[in-house]
Length: 226
Image (tube, rainbow, N blue to C red):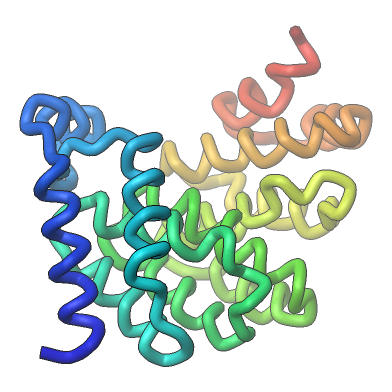
């Protein structure tokens, strides 16, 4: 058994020790029965991950990439979440090649909860360090036939605030304005709403000047209406 397999096995044992079948059932039901869960709620899960890494460390380089992929091969959703929990605070130590890993994982066991940490938190965090990579990756994502990549291209700047490239945000929203996918429409509204916290006038002008799905418009202007 290699290093990564042993690591995964130890992590799984910790999760199993703290599993809650009742919560697991509710969590799976909330996620439309997409994945089974151990039943570990977010605050407890993050505390367990922090303690686990403090005791066992975290692989580096290629071994860490292998670990990320192995986590997403697990049937349990908490294993997938480990990638976000473990790497979100270590983005300053990751090299640009991890963008390939995050891009790959967006398309693995995809649902809104995984895409929403892989795109804005992990890939988005690395894009701030390697801005020259934004166009190659996100231009590819927005043109993908996979709507999860389309969503990723639209929401990757969540949290950028004043650093948001508004032109790119608006361009990507418009590129998929004809999408019938709920998660694309909702993601576009979410991204616009977040940017409205910084530049409400620009968002309002954009929304009023273009034909967008009703859901996108409603989500985009929600804060401004309030």
